[in-house]
Amino acid sequence: MAMRLAMGDWFVLECVAGKDFDVTRKLAAAGYAVWRPLVRVTSTVRESGARKRKPQWKPRFGRYLFLEMAGSESMIWSISTTEGVHRFLARAGSDRPAIVPQEWMDFLRGASALPDRRGIIFTPGMRVRVSAGPFMGSVGRVMGVDSCGSVHIEIHAFGRWIEIPLDSGYLDRLEQCAA
Image 1 (cartoon, rainbow, N blue to C red):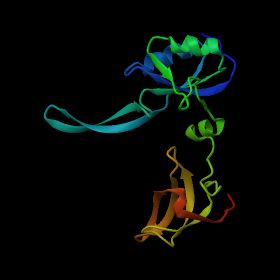
Image 2: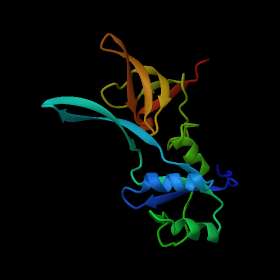
Image 3: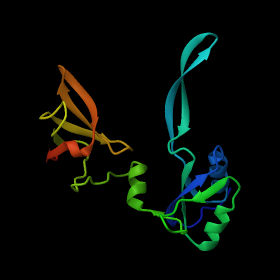
Image 4: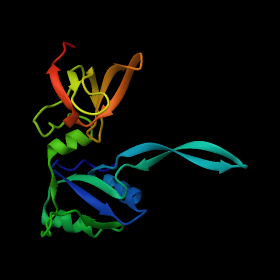
């Protein structure tokens, strides 16, 4: 079992198509913190003439994975030359790998919510009013924020309570509810 390397910054690594699992396994065995999120998808397949829905796990970001490491030149070169690695993602006009801010990683991993354009952080239990769209004027309660940044709220519509995902720009905060 490999020893865990010292924590550092997060980077995005692009792998050769179909090699992301192998690269994840190699880097994890070498002691790096690697995050390759998976999502469950359901696809329809034909088996014995019948159509069946079959759940599968697929990489959320395709052949991209997240790697936490100290960004030294030697580590970057070493990882860049690993079989199956295409490149590190870099800012436009730069050869240096781009660092993913810790706040983004926390958000992507579900640890916290990012503030929207207006600086509002939507937390579970918060009361909100829908300011646009077919549910305009409805008052509801925040149930959570998903990994894509949509705020899931519960409102009373169609004679029952329903949960709907909305962009945070369509919501106005009323007050924070006591948990």
